[in-house]
Image (cartoon, rainbow, N blue to C red; front, side, top):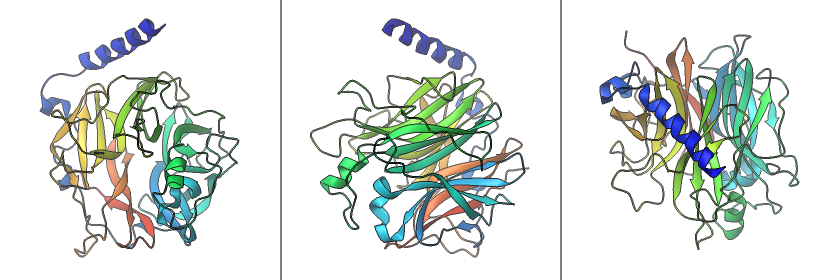
Length: 369
């Protein structure tokens, strides 16, 4: 069975590789060589906040009713900014226009009790449309002990954070009822030495023909409670519901290796013109030269990645209309496409250095004509 598994993965790798040719320029396809030239200043009204809650993430899709739906993570201000592993829930906001204004509609994936793998918190929404149905990938936790305000990075906090697993919910409509499952769609590795033996999170799905590619964050076990390095893996499935077959190698790795705890985070992944693309947060500046910037990567097979010809998409700060820089970096990027072109880059950001609140912004993109 194990030999068949790796044979299947090898065939998939070869199929992907034979579809793409050689040069970096050719592989970059029709996507911009320099994303930064597409990025515009952000109108002040292109901001979504939810009163009384921290807002994080922001996965946006256009429904058949021509409305725009944002799936986002939220948790109460009273719990503190770092309470997300135990207090986050995935909610839904709706707008008539892609840039907003978005308005909160309902909670989509609430807490449902620690008898479930995702019973404590839900976080990191990423929605795709596949054969007319909507699939919402997310991270869930299940931990019996509450986190108190100010308890960030204590042993209790790390134990809660370490219960992260990846699930998927299904619906016929973005604003409909969502079916949740009693098991993760992607669980931790059963081998205690695996790169993902401790936790998996940050799901980034992409539809490729009639299959689904899932990029995800992973942490290995170590002597420390927080685990080993934060790296990324990729898995493949013939259905959005799995089963997903993990590739054995880590992705988004530097050729020369690194001693850093984490070099990339928050991927958004898509497939276009025989090529996979990703926008990631460049944690250490290893890809773009600026720590905290958003960086573009591409790949023939979703396994071997390299930076775009001009890698930086947005620096540590984005710019508000009028020239005022943002107070913090942009995280959890999400692209909204219309007719194959990216129109808006959504992302979450903190409002100030004190982390008193956070919100999502819609950054206009102006493709070259």
